[in-house]
Image (cartoon, rainbow, N blue to C red; front, side, top):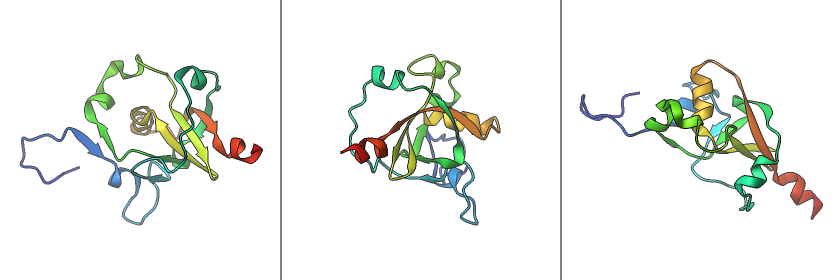
Length: 130
């Protein structure tokens, strides 16, 4: 994607505005791309996330909460070595927000996979109990 910089200057990040929505306004990769998290802080630790079993989620059901991704994270072969192997998503008001693992989701899309195994924390369920 051309970002307006002179040829030879590389962008350090990919902006997802156009990667998620095509010219007709149809979702291509994600359901939507937002800048930030609309849901309240959940206080989940890495150990809490690890206790949630991953499940298959379609990429077009996810809403990205970051508009930019560093290209080195996307292209780094070792990027899946560090941290959780599964992306993290939060279900809030019946939507699934991709909180962590954007590089894994984009890598899956580049490999023409439509689903991804994701750990989903259901804030809707927590709110219903209160």
